[in-house]
Length: 525
Image (cartoon, rainbow, N blue to C red; front, side, top):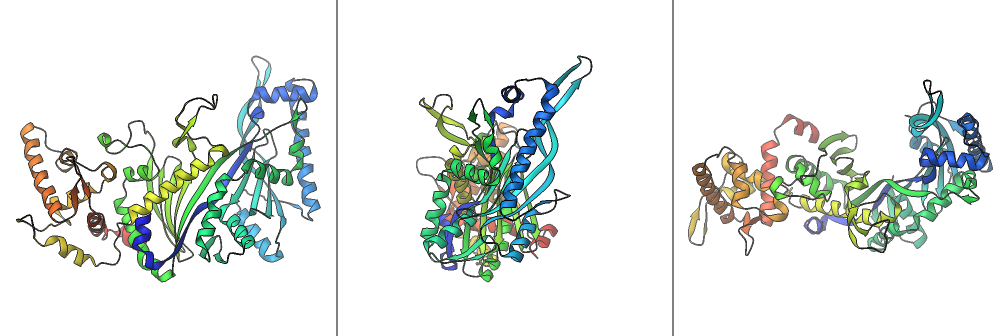
């Protein structure tokens, strides 16, 4: 990332990295299993017979419904039912805020029927037995939108049926604006994006503190404000404790340019570079997945999908790279802000160095990242690392130097150590094929050898004689690329790596070879 910032320093106002949207999930572990629910029903009613389950569950739902309605009434609000779950609740809330100028407290309460994980009664006619089984079904949910003194605009989603799962959505940028106001730091904001800040260092310090907040207390307090009835649920006289996990986190790095015009001039080149240069191996590298040069940069244990796609929006073009359920994307916001955003939906794809949960004092090792808020700081480290690697890869883009000037520089013969080297033609032929190969993601970390390049450049070489001749050709071609300053030897090894000039130059030719495609023209027209 430092390379990107240094390259565009004169055009950049500042940068900010922190939470964008975060969705938390609160669950009661005991009620996640049938056995736990039956034990709870017996504790509450004195019986665990399934014939009494329906009335037991309905009574609980009515208690929660009454609690939500009391909260709404106390704030002078009513519960508005939405006939369709596809209606944008955020748009309704924004319309209400604009119309009524609400500045704090409960904004509104919405309800709608949505799918969820719950339980259902299964009747076995052969056994003449009734069982409670986990089921994916639809039930009523309540959405309570608040303007919180600390978090700003946020909402709580409450499931009205067992196991009473709740979701809380907050926005890190919304929280930051509240803290900047309280600290007296000036800023300019458009929608959910800061386009200028008087003190970027102070703002970044506030963002850095967010992952370390006491999220359990914050979320419990917000849930109690939304539905006090949930706090009255208990087992054997002890109130239930919710386990809070981060279902989805969006960690965004914003590069604030001095004007929309400056970003607009450079953004098409960044999009083209990401479209034509970033391979699946690069995407895995950005997201911190382990790599193996012997398997083309993909670890043998990886069995998922890697997908990149581009979409045109009214305000610009967005490119998104997905590895299973996690992703990294780039888009322009509010004209002058370049945003790189890593979204983690499946924490199990990531690793954290910790002790076992069953033995906190035991030896530490690399284990799967937990979804719980305890691992939220580590999750942000992984996300920031992904954003940093992505921006470092974009630093190779040269949007200002005309391609003709770049081509002239490498197509002219040069003399190195008294030996003349011909000019290169990286737009076609073997020179172009080698240029493409050297940009493979697995080579960016470990470098490359003749033996790594040869099977990719000459896959048809089968016999020993063919491989020997191909190896000689690769040696001569690498010597040419080295003479032109595009690659350099790694001291003490037989490996090479791209120079800074090579990272700037070769992607430009890859773009040129693909720039005439109809899809690319339509996307950046």
